[in-house]
Image (cartoon, rainbow, N blue to C red; front, side, top):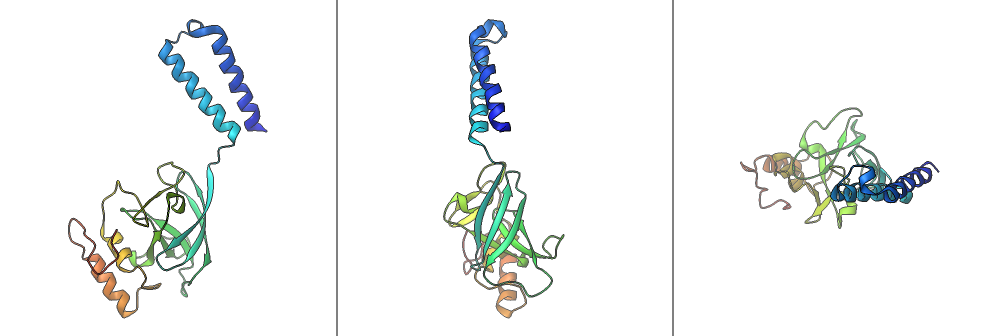
Length: 198
C-alpha cells in the first residue's frame, strides 16, 4: 500500500513537471530529461515492489545445499538443507569472499573461520545460484564457481579448490595434504594442477 501511494505521488510530480515545462523548474532540456528518467525508474521499481531481500538455494563442492536469505548489501542468513554436517562445535555458517572465490564456512557461532580449511567453494550453474555482491541482485558464476572476477586469486581460494570433494573438516591425511598443497600456490597465486581449477 505504501509503495502504491509513493508511486502515485511520483506520477503526480512527473505530470506537474511536464505541465509546467523545463523553464518553470530552471532545468535545461538534458537535466530535465535525466530527472524525468530517474523519477520514472523510481516509480516503476516502487510499483513493481522491488525487493531488497532475496532467497536462494546454494551448493558447495561437498554436495551440501543451503538456504540463503540475502540482502543486496551482502548480509545473509544461512541454514543447511541437505548434505553432511560438521560434528564438532562449528555448527554456524558464514560466507567468505576475501579473494576471487565465494565460499561457505563452518564456524563457531559469532566467529569467523579459523582457517581456510573451514570453508568450501560455492558451485553454480548461473548467476542466480550465487549470493548477491556489490549491491547487485545476484553474484557471478564463472566456470561453475561463484566468483568475484575483479579480485585476485589468493591462497585461501587455492585451499578451497584443493579441498573440493575432500569432505568436511581438515584432519584426515588427504585433507592435510590438500590443504598444504593449496597454501603453496606461489605469488601470484596459481592453483596447483591436481586441484580443481578456477
